[in-house]
Image 1 (cartoon, rainbow, N blue to C red):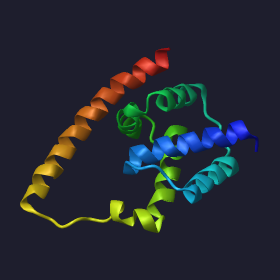
Image 2 (cartoon, one colour):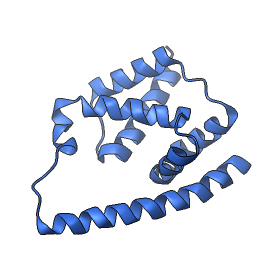
Image 3 (cartoon, helix red, strand yellow):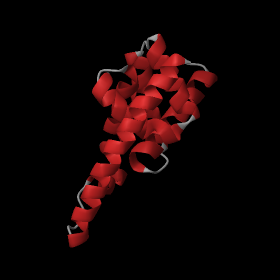
Length: 136
């Protein structure tokens, strides 16, 4: 693999890690993502490639597009790449606290409702954004 391709995979892994757990990834996670990207050889169709390129340039929209794709195209190559990174991060012992439940308090239900409402509106926005990306 050449340097440009390796750099591309590292950049993708960092962006996805920031989206999924809010932190940068370690070298081992970068290697795992790079390895799975090489072995699975995602062949993206034109639509998925447009979406992926947009997300790599504008990572703040990943949650909106991910939510929208969950409804419109759950088997999208874009979602597969996100799930591969999710699986890698979930298996890293140093990140286990990010995936474990914390202590429940009365405030937990407020947070739960807030995240649910936020997810609905983010997904609706993503549906519109997805249509816009596909046009250009």
